[in-house]
Length: 299
Length: 276
Image (tube, rainbow over all chains, first blue to last red; front, top):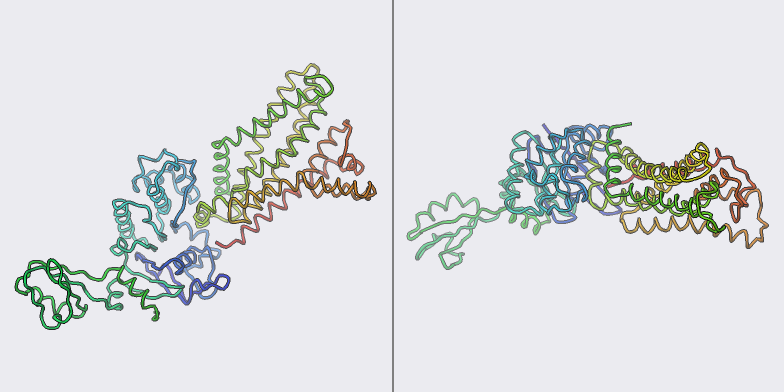
């Protein structure tokens, strides 16, 4: 089932093309990563899906309805949203804040308590927000987004300000949500953590889609080499690799194309003197950098 | 009334209690009203609770400066403040209509001011009544009820002005600046300009149309209403000129209602058409 459907969507603001000819389908249960520099159009895309703005051209459908139309009221009960840099009411306690949002969304107070425990704030429910750290505020924001068990969750920079442990907890809760059938859109600059949880990525630049697909599809599209580190004494590389390699303190570093990988690996493994081998597949960071450098082609 | 609207209003009101807004406004009103009632006739060489009408007229003269200022301070950041901290965008993704959000906030702020006025001025009425020698309670209470109704209305008008400012700007500091200008124009400038007009034309302005100019300023309507109710006072300045027109209390009340509804509707419409 398609949850979000953007077809040929354009958005112009006072002469600025925030989005151009964007096509995007998100299926139920999918986790989509939305990447791009500042001003690439990520927030505009999220606002369109939320129905906060209307497209200048093209069509936006969420749960097969117009999110900015007359159904918006019902639709929003199924949406969860957390934007970047939200600071909640400083004079209220964490529980009071969440209860306020819960009431507005038509949820019970019991759910607020459960969610605060789920994001690890049970010790701080009665403390005022002004005593919260950045990470705690971010967790509260996440609990807020999870109110009413939304079927579609839109998270803009959700891990900013979280320590590594909290970030890991956050991604495991994303995994858990995905298991329950929730559809999730994640915007993030911190690519390293995201790559494990996303099913698909969309890279935007200047309002256009640069690349879209699963991580392995993007790796193929980018055709980035695999980095291989070989450790051992007096290593002699086989013929096709002997031309370009780099000697390091522990051994040799070389790059092979992804197509060659399966063919060359057995040869490398049987090299005399080999003690250890490390294989680094191109990360999301590498892919992102690649598409941003070679931005001439669009999909 | 919808649930969402009451939830928003309830939160605003509780914030008002928590931030001591209700308490401080009540105290200011109570001290001001009681003080004026006791020392109001000090100029004529006596202290003590004496003339009710003199007290009310001098109270109105001070309230007309203070109430608009309090109302503007209370509400100027209600929308732009939430915009700056990011909660406004978040709330707009919630299942509620924009008018419900704004109306809820206005209701909350309106209640804060109304509660504080009733508590503050009501307390003063009780003290004045208890310590006066020859008091007719019904007369005293009727006077205070009249005064409170018009004072609350004046406060609400300036809360509505604050909302117009708050939905129109994107920075809190700018909203504060504009609120100050609005206060200055309505409370001080307007009367000065009218007085200037009177003086430069040496009183030769059309005596029939001149009082109607006062209807252009809600603070003047308020003063007219209070002064007319306690009409045994010797009037001076603009109010003396306005007396010639003899507006009925009902007309003045409707005039204030008009001043309340216009900015209120404008801020609702403005917020409804806003893009995020």
